Image (cartoon, rainbow, N blue to C red; front, side):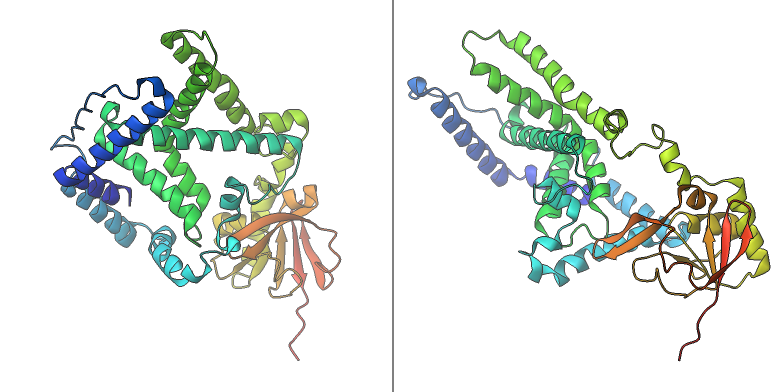
Amino acid sequence: FYLIISLGLLVLARNRALHKLWHSTSTRLLKNSRTKATPEHAATPLSPLPAIQIPATNSLSASFVMLVIVFGFAWYLFVSFDSGTFESIVNVGQNIILNLGEFFVKESRDPSVLMAVGQASPDVVSLPRQVFLVVQYVTQFFIVAGVTGLLLSLRKARFQPEFITMTLVSSLLLLMSIVLPFFTKSIGIARIYHITLFLLAPFCVLGGISFFKKFFRLIPNSLDTPQITSICTKLVVALVLIPYFLFYAGFVYALSGDVQTSVSLATDEFRHIFTQKEDVVAAKWLREADSLAKVKSDDHSVKILASYAGYSPGQRLSFTNQNLDKNDAPFIFLSSGNIAKDKILVLEQSDWGDRPWLLSLDNGTLFEQTNRIYDNGAVIYATRQIPAE
């Protein structure tokens, strides 16, 4: 997607008619902005803008794009045994077409997208979470400001044309994630945002510097330009980037006693997701006892069954909000972490995929029709399945 659209933009940029149109439009916009900023010099003629030079040869060519596409198809056809990612990409267009009727329905956007545009709140509401949300809004504003500044001053841009076009594609991808219904259902907004930040992250800094520069220009008798640039850079780092890192790494949550997000800073809180020797022994014991039976477990423990006991996808079931009270498997497997924390990860199924949430093992109906048959720290229950009437 990136390479194809970027190549198309480079081809269009070399078109003389479109080049002249963009040149005249950007000149007019800059002229209007200068006129509003300094009305006393409105009659002063502006020097013509230099033309934007797009080199005829670059590293992003049609043959390179075709080579990447061929290798991508070859990987998923002959090497990869999991075509889930490829199917997700193919289903993006289908999701958009089938759900265009829900264009104005708020629920057709990912909850994370709604939170990014101020239409939803975090799952955990606390003061540190709200502060981090504000910091994220600031970074998004700076990215928009940086990309907008790039579009209005392409003649001065020091970036390579390939980088500029891929930056524009990244911006387009995020815009489509906000505007189009169910666009992020197949790929996920977290993955899209992670990929686009590789190219958009520099514009957070550039947009922040531009913002603080305009702020200082409002102050009478401000410093000269080199000093302002240095101060603005330090402000972006101190007020935005460092707080963003501390929040994202979980340091602030660990310091304030909030719900933890970092495994390294709160090992005990995440011990239930670590695989212990007892879990492996119990999983292998169950496999030897009945190699064909289905086993139900939580979202983490099913991975133990797959990795260490060789259970196929059809044999392992995850706890969900829909099958939690059903005896639909002859065995229930709980890891030592589940027992130690007295909790299991249950998947809540929704239009936006499965979202895990913790449930206490004291649930009254979870083990009503079960017998404990194995316990070495990890526990295995045999369910007494009730025949259908």
